[in-house]
Length: 157
Image 1 (tube, rainbow, N blue to C red):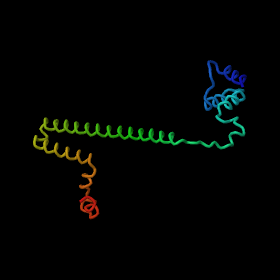
Image 2: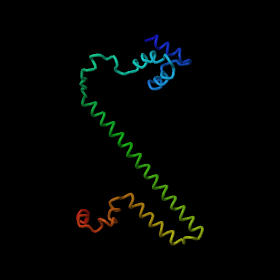
Image 3: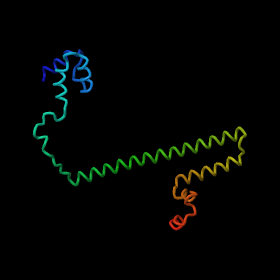
């Protein structure tokens, strides 16, 4: 094994360790006589190549109740972190959208394309829409497909 690795390193100058299996096999095809030296290196990199008869036995893992509970606790913390990150992203997107709408209204008023009264009216409309987007139950009231449906009215009133 050592001699094959030494031959491999001797053929490739400046190589201090073995290449990954895919790169090594590609290089072995390009260099004549290297394939036999590469066989030993690639064989060594396999995970369970020389496990023998022990590999056929099934390993029965015994999970303790504490380890399972710790796993689900870590999993729940990860889910909560992802949800919190998503909520923060949504809130920052809403804030950015509102600030851009405000800048747009100010620019339209400054150029004279929109009056002050209309800008105030559109600001109220935008504020109401942003509130409805954050509260889907109230937004559901304005959905024309279910607005006056009997089941929806009985469910909510």
